[in-house]
Length: 77
Image (cartoon, rainbow, N blue to C red; front, side, top):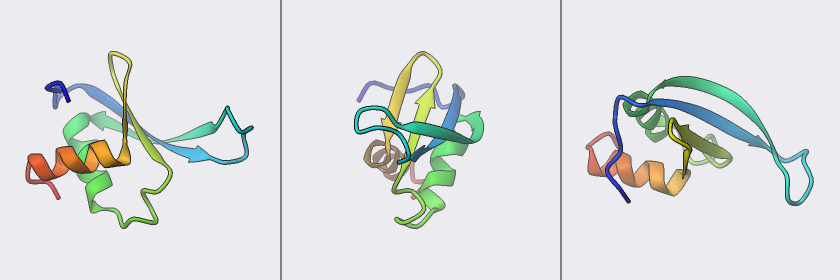
């Protein structure tokens, strides 16, 4: 994974399964610096983070496994 800007604006989204098989709806849960969003996700239990996606400014999206790997790498987990 390429180095990320920890101060970049990030948005935490939760997937809503009411969409079609190929299109999901998302609800915005939080915005802030990437470091804060990663810490927030790392502090959740597995049930809470099951449907989460983090969008980072610049068009990159991170799934839960990527967020948790970052949290572990940076000592946030």
